[in-house]
Image 1: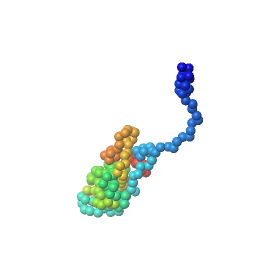
Image 2: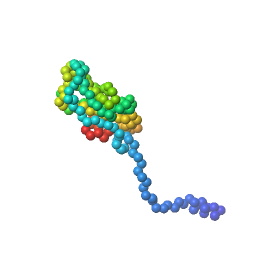
Image 3: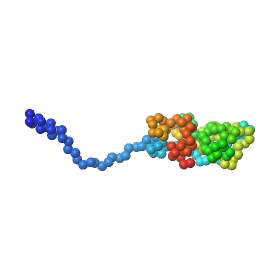
Image 4: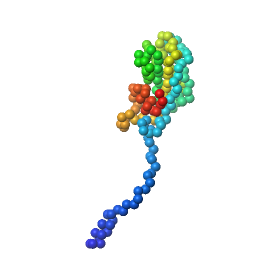
Length: 173
């Protein structure tokens, strides 16, 4: 009996050695907040040199290979504008938008091309008119800024302030 108690006593004691070195860090997820850089593409700011079209149907084209089939068919495409005499002076608005008495939007007439549009009666100006787009590849999941488990949708991004989208995606303003 004494032998059984001695074996149980010694087996219950765990001898600890020195603490080993720290293991390698795990991979961060791409949640737009604390993970690595998110694989998004953002364009420069474009200013049209001229507008094509006619009264009520104006446009200018931008060509960029990043506007590919994968992005167009399954990714998220965001476009932004800033125009003079906007009610919200200096604001950067998500498109589609209504500003300065006209509707502003964008469309994709072909892969590799984006067309910024305006339905004003007169051709929009070119001075101080700025347009930009952001492309988010399919399958990119962005967590909401409150660290919840909810992922953001395109509609969520459209309802965010431009500065907040830039901060979330690591885009310089």
